[in-house]
Image (cartoon, rainbow, N blue to C red; front, side, top):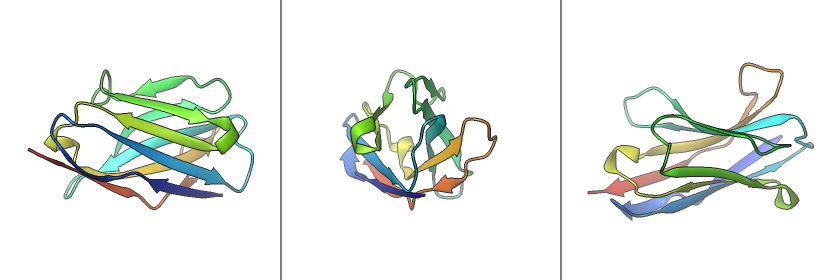
Amino acid sequence: VQLQASGGGLVQAGGSLTLSCAASGRTFTNWIMGWFRQAPGKEREFVARLTWNLGTTTYADLAKGRFTISRDKAKNTVYLQMNSLKPEDTAVYYCATRSSAARDYHYWGQGTQVTVSS
């Protein structure tokens, strides 16, 4: 399984970015796709996840109302649309995937840097 994250960059506070995660190497039926982030000096934290089949979504409090996770089955790609960005959203964002039966995420992408200037 390979996950290729992209779409990060520099944006002003209040702006928007959409991250993409292209997945390959298997079919993802019954798998979970997630986004995480890690800011400098901080622990990695959960942002959002989505069930591949039904598209059911779950968000961390930090993301509710501002971020939207979605997927394009035909492209095997998961997106994270981020609106109303704040300087505290600055982090490396990672996509990851696991089977629905697993507790831990099996596979991780390489991360994409998001920097929000004030």
